Image 1 (cartoon, rainbow, N blue to C red):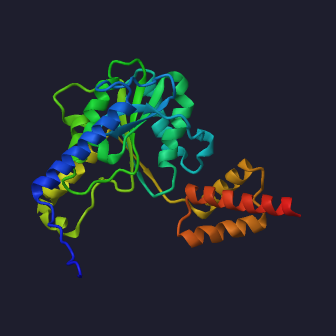
Image 2: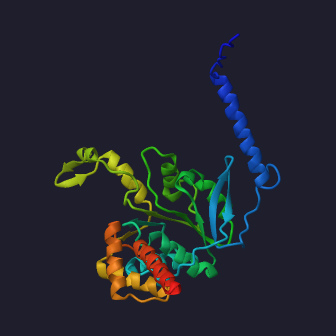
Image 3: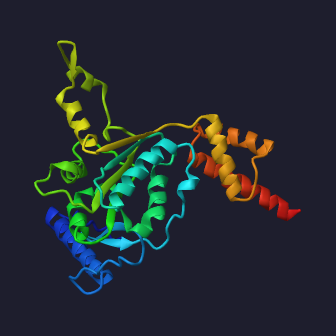
Length: 305
């Protein structure tokens, strides 16, 4: 006798809710086990590294030391002398106890914005500079991060790389409050450095221009534009980065080839220009990638003969 196929009723909303609750409880238990004793936060190893990251597991976050640092130096950053000088000056003021500003680094991709922060850390870590990297979606935890470090003797840069916001993201308002809008006083040992390809950190739309009004030959932006500008204005120091010229790009290529004990020969120069053309960009990142590829090919060929 042939058996009829059985059917299973779809789970109702209450079953799904119970499943979600059980999954969250399991994540919380795992987080407790990973953080040591249940319900207790494992102390941050402040002596383990000058660089840290804010990590969240199971709904709770902690500051974790970064074990393997990017060892780039300030001398490796070419073509951005003016930008480096302004940001380094601000950083020196900060680590030596003088007034300094939050910094927004904006402009072309691959021009050394985030590398400059890493290089400054390597240069001034011996003067008690520390960097805590925070992902954009974790900016809502900024107050908690600041609360954990405000009484420490070190100087902390809270660093957010490649920062931009869609409209109504919660991290947008959290960052505004920490930068300038809180009732509490600013913390003297914390600054925020952020990089972005957008000067105002949010997408700008053509229809927003319609909100602009003209009064006695003065331009008055609409409320939407004012809201977007208000976040970037809370950074005391704006520094813009620009695409490199061909000459600057080749200088950076020569520098990184020298790092691999090679020279910028005519074949290497032609290949470097073709490499940049294929990527549609002449940047420090593109130069670094080319130098690695070229040096690897040449060394492999030389050892294969």
